[in-house]
Length: 400
Image (cartoon, helix red, strand yellow):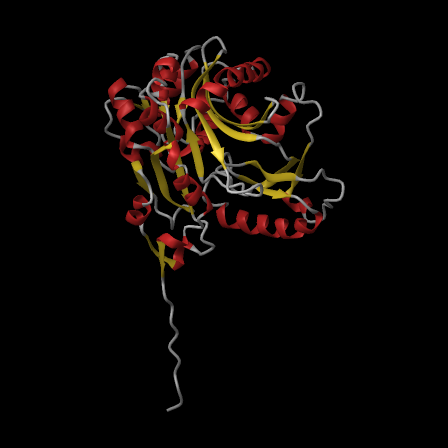
């Protein structure tokens, strides 16, 4: 059963629903997104009845915005608790403490943050909303002299994005401070099957422009990335599953793996794969199998077959977040054609209303390994090269 909600539902996801006749819960938002006339639509009351009457129903949501509906209508099930276990970063850290007993973290209210001294905190550290999304409000603090500036920037950003998502997705009242996790960062799409066993349906390396960068600009997958990480990541997810005891449960996992092979989770996002229908759609474009259908039909991808003939290819999601430093209202246009001209083989471009959300769009691209420089360039760009700005003038009156 499917929940659809803002901020985005891709054409590929819509086609997946139609081709497989997956039922869509007809919430007000689902109707607003054009699913009201769907042959597969199911009204809310019938959906609740069916979910409560089943022990093996698989649910998927395109957006964490649906978490509020689930909490309200499915409180008699364990699902809201399972979601909260992962969505609340402090609760998640407590869950996995047996696996990482020395990992430092603490939860602090925004109100108490102002008077919190950084002298006793482990440098460097990360601060972010306890319940968050899309790298919003995420900051790295590497020295005491940065603390005051980071607190000021965090408060300003939270004020600017607080209204974009419901509280279940982005709660700006509490933050978590945790030690900085070293190593390469990866994003993993997976699901726990009916027996609680993890099945990986996508692996992406999250690359950065510098050690201080915490943005979401580029996620990259390839044959080498998948083959090097598939087995250790599956074992890691099995360890997490043994603690959480979830079944029929999709997750989008962010982790770091250091040079010794040790894996530490950053966070696990429940009920979905990559946000904005991103990583799962890209996996289909790159490897030819449908991660949504894998989960909802309980199928394991044939990774050996999917990775054949993939030597020398990189597949990337480029998140065109507004890193220009300019307010969206001062930007007249984004030159998408110029952006596309910078890439060897664009696969799909999704334009987003940047005046509603702080992102210009998403670009899916195929790049030869020999041309990795095109990804490095967009990684370092503040995107000012692609925008035109509004020229404001003031008319001054004189004495008559």
